Each structure stands twice: as C-alpha cells, then as structure tokens.
Image 1: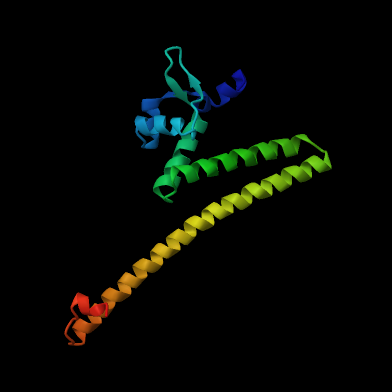
Image 2: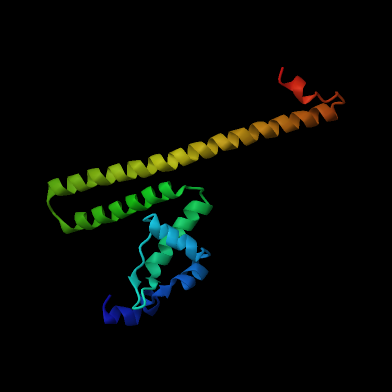
Amino acid sequence: MSAEANAAHPVAAKLLRIQEVAAETGLTPRSIRYYEEMGLLAPAARSNGAYRLYDADDLERLRFIRDLRDDAGFSLAEIGQLLEDEQARQRNRERFRATQDAAERRALVADALGVVDRQMSTLRAKRDRLDAMLEAVGERRAHLEAHLGDIDGGREPKHPAEEHR
C-alpha cells in the first residue's frame, strides 16, 4: 500500500498482535494459531520480535471462519475448501481482467464454473444434513404431540416397550 493510501486509510494499514485480534474477533489466540496450523490463515506480517501481526483482511477472514464454524456449523475442512475456492475465484477474476485472449478467458470461466459448482455442492450437502436433522426433530415433536393427544383424550399412555411393537 502506498504512503498516500496509508494516510487515506490509517485503519487498513494498522497491524494488530494476536491478543488484539482475539479481542476483535471473539476468538482465542489458541484458535487463531490453530487456524494458521490448518492453513486457513497466514498472518500479514511478523514483527522484529517474531510476533504475528494481522491486518484488516486477516480480521475479515477470521470473522468469516468463525461465522461458518459457529453459525453455519461447517467443519474446518469444509471451511478450508470454501476459502480455497474463494481464493481461486479471486485469482480467476484477476487473470480474466488481465487478458483479452478468448481461449484463456474461456478456460478461466470454465475453471470458475467448476469452483462455483464445488461451492454449491458443499453448501447443498450442508443443507441436506440440516434438512435431515429438521425432519428428525419434527418426528420427535409429532411423537410428543401424540402423547399429549393420548393424555388429553383420556387414553392410558402406552408403556415405552409397547410402543415399538
């Protein structure tokens, strides 16, 4: 980043230590180091004392990882694949913009379609697992509602062993 860009965007140029990043993202330093070990993150820089230093892009990536893990229930392997796909998509976009060769552009679009198809497959598999979980919970709810119906209807509740006959 140029000096002019740094002056215009002082927050973007600020590098944070791991403790500061942990406080900003709600993650533990141990989790952040683990994500590095797993290849999900690489610190923007190292200080003279070999401290990890992170920039705004690193914070955004960590929040994305956290949200996929916590909110969407993705495994770290799935997150790694989604992050890798996103990097491939960005590389393809840059290469596409840099060339006017029709054959190269066609190959880049074909590759990008493969990346998007893989992302869709990952997301659909997650949705299918969630749909199956919802269905199982719905069946448990219906079972419990049947018990309420038996109770409210005055019938004797069945013994659990009798229900499976």
